Amino acid sequence: MKLEMLIDELQEIVDSAFKMPFSGGKKVVNAERIQEIVEEMRTNMPQEVRQAKSIVADRNNIINKAKKEAEMVVQQAEERAKAMVERNEITRQAQQKATEIVAKAEEEATQVKQAANRYIEHIMKKADDDLSLNLAALKKTRQNLRTYQTKNESSGKSGGRTARTAKRDSNHEDGGDKQ
Image (cartoon, rainbow, N blue to C red):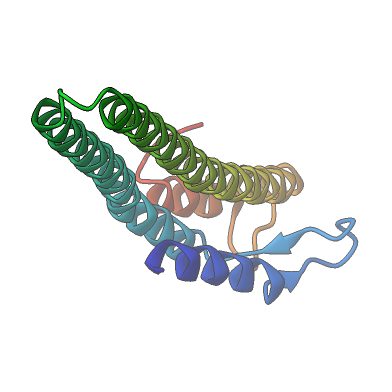
């Protein structure tokens, strides 16, 4: 799944990032690559939604098919019952069987619907959980980057550049967006 590969790549970037000395475990990451990955995740998200819609459509098709089969069975049972009207016992048995078949078909349709709903809920929850984890990690990484930049700007140094150059470069990497 493309989305999971992107999540793994984000994790790999964070895991392999250079640790800043004396920063309490903070790391320097490639913010541009992280932004690209987030954009790819946004692009791939509709695929997950399409899959969920497809599952719902499949569920509806299964339910409709079960209803049609149940109607067909009921119709067949009614036709048989009409042919055997003169025999009370046979008629009663046919009606009982038809009722059982309808009940069974309705029960199966309900079970299929419940199973489809559970599966859809599972898929949606997993996607939601994965996105929440990735968003939290991304926010933390961005905050760490901001903290690092602010710390360097306040000390007047930024990797051999002036604080003004580091701030200009930081704004350029963020797309000019001051946050």
